[in-house]
Length: 295
Ligand SMILES: Cc1ncc(COP(=O)(O)O)c(C=O)c1O
Image 1 (cartoon, rainbow, N blue to C red):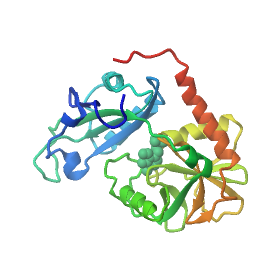
Image 2: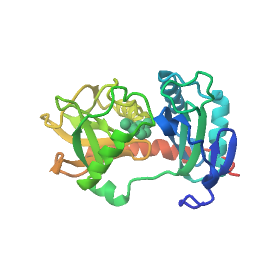
Image 3: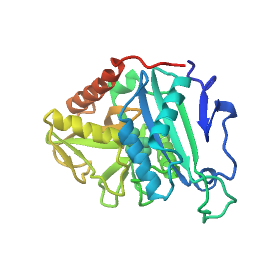
Image 4: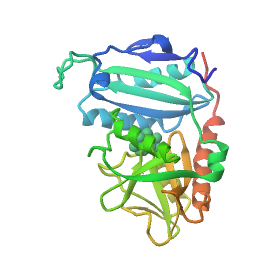
């Protein structure tokens, strides 16, 4: 299976098509208004990591913008599985997008629309060995996004601008801070700090996405006896000696520089190493499960 996009098959509104032939109407409201939501799920040897929580979040995102997922949960799971079977990467990244559907361009949508559903499967990206060894670098930006960051919206212009600014400053990720300087989350990641041996992250509210990796990390940390605090925090807090980002595509990655200054001693720390090992162990457990048929 190539990772280039050649020979890939996509699901679009009831049909599996070669990726280059898969398209949606120019009046799709996703294209016109970013009127839609999405999910990204990791699939390890055909076994999906936390598929239930991802589909629950998809339901929540759809409900928040008054879209009905255009098929039952069981059928959606079958479509996701079949999309992977037609693009059976060992470690895959399943992308699911639901938009309100197609209509002549007007802000107010008719309430008769059939939502658009697309699903793709590509190779799951992972941080390079060099990045894991050095840790990632970040910049902070005052949050200029909207006030419903809890919805996994496809309207990602602010995130794209944040990522571009990070890249321009030779950093890997832009982290949003509120007007008081509390660190919220990254442009496509959540962020934790180690402060006085406790794992600290911003609480779930309208300023952050409830990351599935975030909640997995919290569960694994608690199980390992690590104290977790979900509270607003700042980079200059006394006792802060590690930061780490979480996302489906990164699992857990230490963040060792922020705005060109070292976080702690500027090297990946023990908390990030321990939690990353626990998340990777959960992925490896899926690798050991009975093989899934690939078409
Ligand atoms: C803004 C934002 N926060 C956090 C995350 C991480 O979420 P997850 O762990 O579910 O991949 C993402 C992922 O796309 C994101 O876009």
